[in-house]
Length: 112
Length: 115
Image (cartoon, rainbow over all chains, first blue to last red; front, side, top):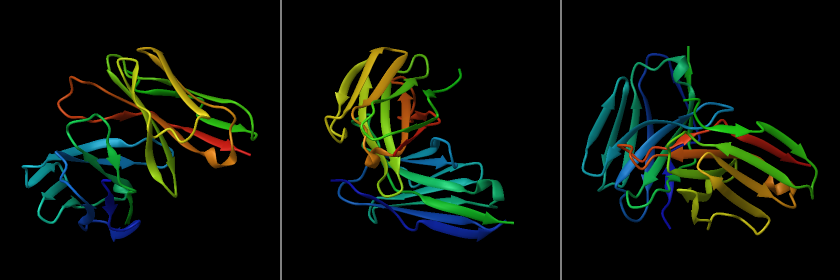
């Protein structure tokens, strides 16, 4: 079965630095990789999506890369702020079915 | 739109009792998903519906769990009888077949504690 692995459970960085989160998957490549943000006591919120044939996607301070050879996606937050502190979830989207497979998440803390 | 609405937000019950969780999806969305989130297992899909019809319930852990969607604006997840290992946060999410992406919109969740 498909597995999604996110590099670490927790990541602490200093405000202003770039946070880089890693997502690795096994078996076949998804049609899309999605990234969600989850704050304590709330449901996940969709951030952005990258297609299998895209190398890079940007949205404001967010950047996602997708390397099908390495079976890896990197999620970057530039000029990080304490408000970026949350858990970030990498999500496998096969594109052929509506259900998504969620990674376990990386808890990011941006220190002031 | 108010987004996905779930009730109750918190539920504390005793082992053996019946628990019913409720969800109102975003109006116009064709798909509804029930998830369970725990520290150990993360976010797991339990079941999902398309146009009120259950499509995949392979994630439902046991016969004690059942879900219904009597109409496009309401779904329930029932646990009978409940057990302590059912303690988790249960999320409902919905999505639209007409969206550009297959993004899902989550409710705030119901935190269930079974004593």
